[in-house]
Image (cartoon, rainbow, N blue to C red; front, side):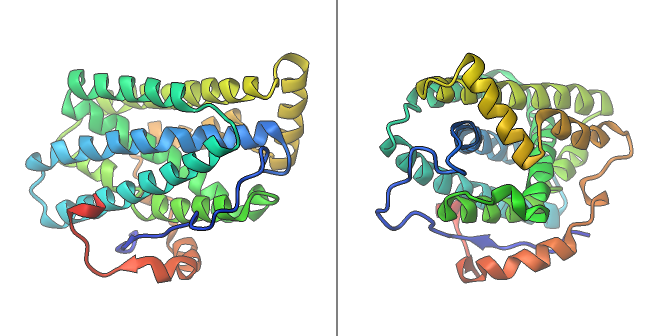
Length: 277
């Protein structure tokens, strides 16, 4: 059983020290790969929060409703922290406005046109992807070797909270009676969308550095060899989600969560209100 989880209000980018252009192992591809993931988060997590909120009138369990409120508060903080990261990215000369606008349009269309059960199912699947990524970040510390320390702390904090609330959207999905067929088909949409958007934004950022063709292939191969984590690896680790009996808590992360929590204990708030959501 995943332990209760708090709301934290960290700030990782208070100093004025600029980011280098390539702030992850001096590797353009690795830098833009992580930047593109960071760009996905704020509007994506806003979509998740709205989906869960829209489903709450159908949820009667008071404990699940409470967990959903804290989930929303944590996700709201993630959006704020990654948006602060955006400002440092812009200062390096990287153009990020176009992908942000495209993500906003797609999310707004889905919120206006896709049913609540499907949006919750997409959210549950996406939360599984982020839990898989979080587990990699927190158990394989070599993955963040050579990253700017501020961005590294941002990713570790975000990873911790993704594991803390990994089952909330899934439990809301079950509580409102989403069928396995909808769950599985929505997962295909979510997984494909994340991978496609992640790759497209990565390529867009790399092109700004002249990384294309042979140069991009060389940087990509060098980065994959150094971090030993790829889209195919991510896909394999996400596959258990399609088992009818799957539940996020079958991966017990309690010891991992307990080990990482002290790093961010100073940011915990004992009470929160809608300003955090």
